[in-house]
Image 1 (cartoon, rainbow, N blue to C red):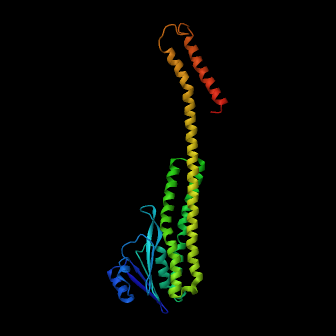
Image 2 (image 1 turned 90 degrees about the horizontal axis):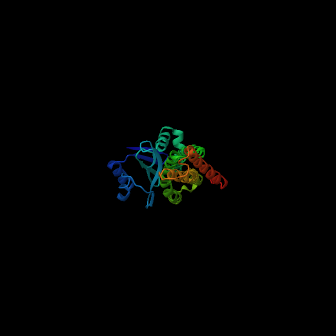
Image 3 (image 1 turned 30 degrees about the vertical axis):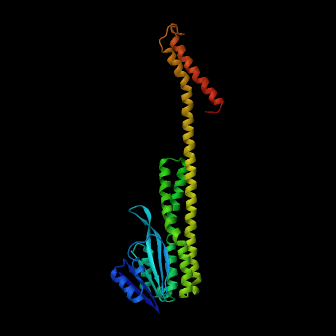
Length: 305
């Protein structure tokens, strides 16, 4: 579905779920090459920027939370920038883009504000809007990290490690989407400035780069935090496991001589000490208890307990 906004001499063409008719329109009116058109419909997994004589072609991806998979999935946004026109193609998954389009289309003041100054000005504000709205997603990750941190120091367990794994998955997927296009966005701004006179909007361009850097730095901070919590939780779990194994080992060592003594008197051999003594049973019990007490005191002195 194609929608068009015009203001002054500039135009914004937004195509949601492009079909063959939309591609033919772009080919006829803007002389877009078939190699570009062929990549507007199928999803492309990598960020790209290609410079042609009369236009730029850019593929960008932005993280979007998918409730079905409970993970961040990449949403693709394709851009074609000509001398006076900004063309955006997408599948409708980036809600901020749709909202920005509706505001620009329905509000005359906003349309003059963003598009009246030129499609370059519009491009920068569109990118800045989409990038800035990734920060609340990172804030949600930060809240989860804080909860995990509190649980980890109260007493790490298997559930904590599972939750850490889920958060790490979110961060990894976020990084895999954001990292490849950092250089693409910076290169895009340089080429737009050179080809379409975007230099007058240098402040807007720097705002886009700054927002992208802010998202990346926040992501790096979350990555370091969750890795530190994971390492601490693993160390605490290892310490608890070692303490448990140490206690079990000491108990086993204490019980071994007691078991040996009990087995010796259970062999039914003749003339074993205390066998003919009426109190022999209790003497053997006392010997077992004394052995356990002596070994326990010894381990306490050695600070093994």
